[in-house]
Length: 255
Image (cartoon, rainbow, N blue to C red; front, top):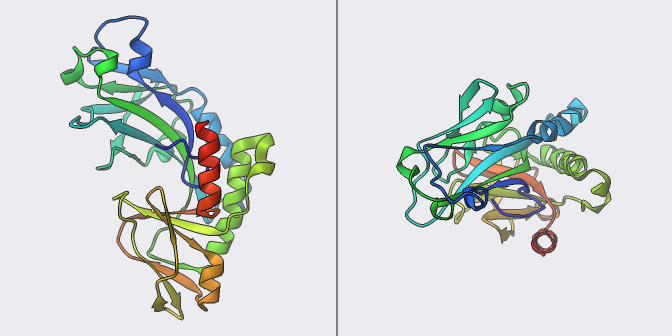
């Protein structure tokens, strides 16, 4: 998961077996666990927003396994809360599925454990993956069509989410003017069509950034659109500023 502030994710935790094993040069073993203290608190910040700010968009926490070339996903990953354990599911890109709902269903999740006997004899520097946790803001419903009214509300409320995320630095969050649409295949985002009265009226101009197709609301309005249609059964849509602004924040975050 990228260290990008906007629009897709804010990195909140990186767990690297390599770093945790450096002080003790011994094999990782069948199970590797790391703390996720504070993630529940992060979700609580968003849940404290007024309901009308959370009806169109919502915060999503995801766990992303970044695999080195030729490496496979671990056999099993679990959320832990004391003696409780819940299995985490992942898509084909190594991204968790439904993690936010799982976290909310637990009182105080405190760790993630990776069970992977085939890697038990490896040392941290050779484990073959790293794990990132990030939080992003998404449109909650993805039925394939979205009205311009819904999009405009999502941009406004999405900015409120990000301001809550960064706290006292909220004044730095720019105005959200675009939707960012991405799919399961990060190299080919789904096509987006402007619509009017339920009919396609053409593909709006867009920018590509970090695997997302970014479209300005102003562009849709200039086309006379009252909504959009997105191809494909699975996609994510996020409120966003323009690509240049996103790149600026990403550059500052990498420094």
